[in-house]
Amino acid sequence: MIDKQEEGCDSQFLEGCNTTWNLNHEFICWVNYWFKRYKEDAGIDLQFHKFTVDGVQMNQEEAIDRIIKLTDYINSDFYDFSDEEREKAVEEVFDIFKEIFWAMWW
Picture (tube, rainbow, N blue to C red):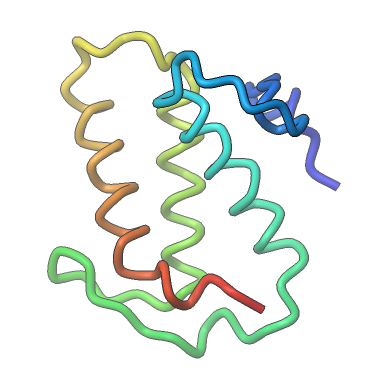
């Protein structure tokens, strides 16, 4: 089981509380935690679905891995919004998520 404390997200949102302060950070924590969990527990072939995101082809597993890597990076120092690289990472998370959204079931 994935420990949300280890992932840098001790979010009450993950506890079932509907706290809405700083929802931008809560969402990144949610995506990070649940994508790791999805990959761990998915009973489907994550290489079946193929996507193209910004000209790069990837399967569902590669897309999930990329989102996990990006959200790990974003969570490493979330509050530094002056960092242009971090802003690009957030945009990439949304670009990938938008493409794979309908395949995220099992």
